[in-house]
Image 1 (cartoon, rainbow, N blue to C red):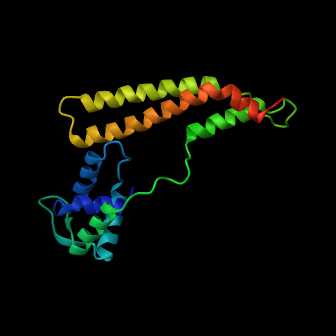
Image 2: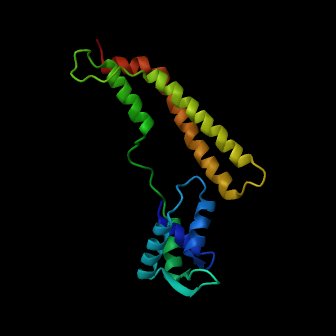
Image 3: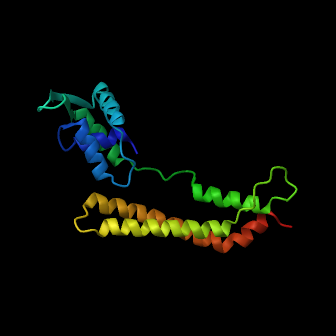
Length: 189
């Protein structure tokens, strides 16, 4: 995710302080990692440097001095171009769950005489435990999105995460059904 473009998108709604941009990011992208304040201000400085945002004033309102930022016409153009770009599907799929299952199969089929052999892993048991963790997370996300007063960003974010978890579950089910065949391919003896 491009922090630069996300901040430009948030600035499209009007001038904002860095603190407000961070808060709005965390509200609008509830399933994303929260932005650090340092990341917000560093990105804002780069946007100003690159002519995509500008300082719209400073004020303290009885507190610490805060700088107000706004998007420039060039920033709006950059945002529109980025938003219209098709994001290519990832050329390679890397996933920790996939890696753990493959390593568990390899460890299971390693000869007992292998030096420094890892303890035998059980890929089937791992998939069952991982499935339970996914199901628990799906229940949490469903509760979040169906809670009274859930806003659109929360619902969309939860739906996105739920669909990815569902895809993982389907992969785990298919892989569990193929474990005997996969193990035999690695160790045909």
